[in-house]
Each structure stands twice: as C-alpha cells, then as structure tokens.
Image (cartoon, rainbow, N blue to C red):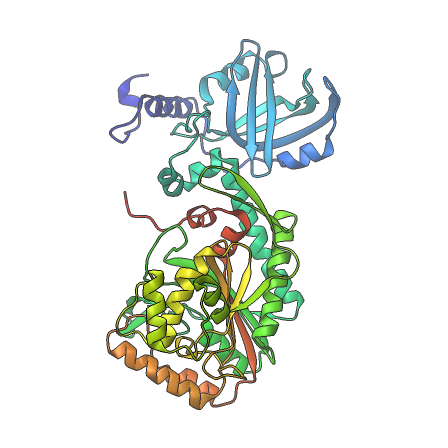
Length: 504
C-alpha cells in the first residue's frame, strides 16, 4: 500500500501508532468496517463463568455463546492463538484454532488485531487442558480498532497524574480503579435505598442560584445572558431543601453536586458530591443515629462488611472495625483532652488565645471566641481522629443555621462526624425561628459586605419561607467523596472518577 492511500494522521505519532493507522487503512481497503454498528452478544463474561464454574479440564460443553470485549492479552502461535477478552464483568480466554477458523480468518486475526482492540467472538464454551475456561472461536468480528497502544502490561499506568488525566486508560488496565468505580456506585445506591426505605423522598434542587447560602464557602460566579443576571453555582442545597420541609415534605433528601471555589488537595475537590437530608420532628440526636446506621449499611452493601482497610505511607494495611456504637464527645471535652487543660463554655477569649499560642495553633487577630474554638478543634482534634467519632456542641456564633443548645445557648446543637483525620459529615437541630434566623443571616451578610467571601448572603425568600412555619427538624450532610475515602482508605483523586486537574 502506498503512503498516498493512508488517511491523514496527526503529527508526532509513535511507531506503534503509525502501524495501527496503517492496519486501519488496510482494513478499509479490504471492505472491513473497523467501527461497525454493533455485535449481537448473547452473554457477558460473568454469565459464562457463572454457568460453567468448576468445569473439568479439557471439556467441551456443546454450548455456543457470543461475547464481546477488549483484547488485553494476545498470544500469537502458528496453528493456535490465545487471547484474553475483558468486558465490564471480567476476563475470559479465547482460543483461535486453525482447524476451526480456517487459515484465512486465523491469519486475519494475526494481521489485524492488536492489544486494546474490541472484538466480538462466537464459539463453543470449553476448558483448556490446563482447566482454563475458554471460548473456542468459530468466528470473530473486529468491533472497534484501537489506534493507541495500551500501557506496558508489567508497569501499567503507574503515574498518579496520568491515571487522573486518562481515567479511561486507568480503568482499562487497573483492576483497582474498576473496583473503586463499582464500590462508589454500590455506596451511592445503598444511600438512596436506605433513605427511601425509611420514607425519605429524593428531590433535585437548583444548582444555579441567585444567592449563595447554606454553608460558609466561596462560590463560583457565573452570568446568565437571558436575564443579564449574576448567578452562583450552589455551595449547598440546604436552603431549598428546608423550603420543601416548610411545604410539607417532612422527610427529604438529595444526592447531588456542590461547588466551592476553594482549595484542591488530597481531600478537597472544587466539585463534589453531597448527601443532604432533613427530617421534621427530628433533631441532631436522631440524625446521629441515622448517620451511623446509614454509613454502616453502606459499608455492608459496598464492601461486604463493616471492616475498612487503610494503607499507610509505608504500604502497611490496617483493618478498622466501624460497626457498633461510635464515640460521641463534646467539642470542649475533645479540646481539653488534646490540650491537657480544661476548656468549657466559660473559658474566655483571651484564655483561649493563650492556649492556642501554647499549642502552636495560628489565629487571626479579628477572630471571635467561636472561631478560635473552631481552630483549636480543627488543628488539635479533627486531624488526629482515626475511628469514626461524633464531635458535638459547637459555638453558636460559628453555626449560623443551627438551633442554640436547649440547655446552654452559647453552643449549638450541631455535630461533626470525623474519621481518619477528615470530616465526613455534619448535622444540626435546625434553626426554625424566622426572627432569630434573620438576625444571624443579617450578621453573615454584614461579614460578606465587609469582604468575607465565605460568609452567607441574606436570602429574603428563604426567610419568607420560614415565616410560614417550619416544623422542628434535624438535618444532616455527608460528603459522598469523603465517605468513599473513609470506606476505602483512598484519596479523593481515586474516589472521584474525574477530579479537576490543570490542563496539560
């Protein structure tokens, strides 16, 4: 074939890529469509394996099947070739014999098929002499030609940056990445099934919002041309879900995306998946029980049990049991334990600042008492917590959407769930008093006006909704990405399929 008959190719191709394009051109010259409409497969790999588990060596079943998948191993021989076909459910060996296929089709396989190609194979289910379940191909079809070679089978795709940027290749060659995808899918499905099984209604609320609220975080800002209006990608669905509780939807939840224009690291992605749920006539205690039971059921459904495995920097794996009751500690007690000195609601701001300085916790001069307590907690408690622990009763002035504690209004009925050094979720006894809520959001809006990009804005429509009376309620939020990190011991770049990365 002359160079003139080759299709135009991108510059800078490797030798292998150029060879594959030449094969593509030859196939088309021969009238073979390298990207056909489909292939009529009868079974997945898993279905074939399930029906013939334990098949004795060197056995012919007489059953004919049609399977399809990617060629991940291809051993070329004279009269007999072996290939491994991979579909979403697993791997299966294919045997291509001169006696069965004939010389022309066997040679066509040798000439056309490369690692990474998709093929469909029809043939008899057999076992090899070594007992390997196989399909003895009676016919085969190229279903999609791969123009790029797969990574080296021994080294794989090991560069963490490449695994993130080319997740499609990562999924092809790394079984661990495929398992993570399936684990995440099972976890999200379990969350939905558990909540709907308890009478919660799943909803979808706006991601484009005219006012950002529901959390203290910096939003992404965009613009709608049709209305010539500034909009925000939501930082939380909270205020819309509470509107639904006002409207009589007493048990409601949403699993969806939030967006926060903040840092990106091993535990933060600007775009992340969040569960939020609200229950009328619940409080932060009922939300605590629901959260523990929800996460434990998710572990059973996604992992098969409540033992989670985490690997340290040296590669040592430690098992942790997360079943049963979880520790519940007040924020003051946790800080006191970390400092070795008592901290209570009566400990003044200056005393707290001295304790922070002694412990090496940096503070901004303008911070009030609640923010100082929060910094002490985050530096001394949160990052040192291993097993799941509920830390409760945070200062009211750093919990603007939370009901004041029924016994001491200086703290709020709020808890944070922490495990393996990261916050997994939070819950409140919700503030439903519209007058008090207006006062707190007004204070937040003044902070925003003063340049605090994380402070919430005043949402008049939300306050109007509260004035129609929201019943006493408990609310919870769980970061789904963080939950997967807790269950699998992996970082956010592994639990999220396509984390945000800088362009190449």
